[in-house]
Length: 302
Image 1: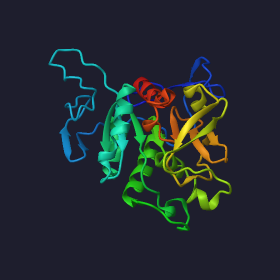
Image 2: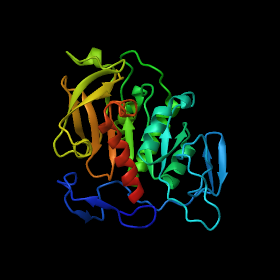
Image 3: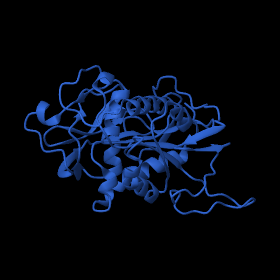
Image 4: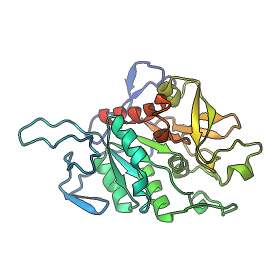
């Protein structure tokens, strides 16, 4: 498996890859149609803007690139790790916490509202992806009928993010899914969801309104290697959760009521889904900035 620059991907040794063992070059990590040879895009539409011959140069928009000035001709440019952040068309103004966390982690975030064309552009030009939080996923997309009250369903966003996730998985692009984003990761790989935790899981904790509770992180998991703890305080703002796991996914963490709090892909370089909202919690609990840092560092090396 090669990255977009034609170089072999390096993955930690399987069955111990998150414990600091020596890196081992592998040619196939079990992904369908793994191919990073995406043709360069001439036009890249970003929100309502379009940049001709988009490369690693971007103007200083809203300070999203850390306030770094564009270098003059002949100057050595600082390499930027461009991170696409998905969102609803009418929720772009709510991304400030994601933007700040990614910038603090050393990445250069750019918001992307739903667009199937943008999905191909992102996987052609961006080094990492954050699937942000938001409304519920249409149950039809994971083979169920609506059985409970749903909130802010956006079918266009669902289709866009599922397609983007599948492309990213096929091309080895790092993904961090947050809340809804973790659920998108699961559904994109064939998994299902509890449509309403309170109605479908007995003795469930309250997982809405930014309630806090402890979660237990699985030993040997990617998340455990990132956070460095078995237990950590987490914030909850969701009424849905992962039910049946998608293909290749494993459980990284649970809360005490057995609700799945984190998932990860067993073979992809970095595909991590977090049910909590670390972008709102890292200032109080600094360990929650580490998933963003890990995303940026892995993206930087690809």
